[in-house]
Length: 102
Image 1 (cartoon, rainbow, N blue to C red):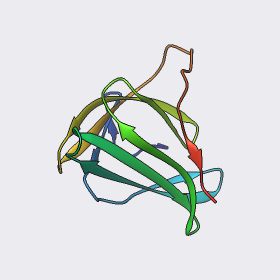
Image 2 (cartoon, helix red, strand yellow):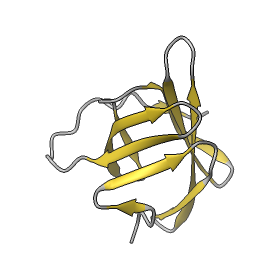
Image 3 (tube, helix red, strand yellow):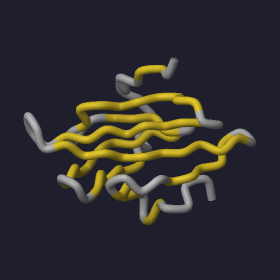
């Protein structure tokens, strides 16, 4: 299973808990951070082999992100607790707004 933390099409990213995903023979690390100001929003950072791959910032419910080839929609952002993602299965990818790491 590529996303071992996924349950019933949902993946709960706990605040500041690193998740490890194997993708194309490489280990990726995913970390979520949640902020309160100016309004509650989240950030998901994805790294591989110690280098940044992508960062999604100012996430709120409805935003779409791509993590190691999987497309997810933000369902909930709970301050200092979690970001809940739902797998997108409709086939029409929306803009993700990822920023490539340097």
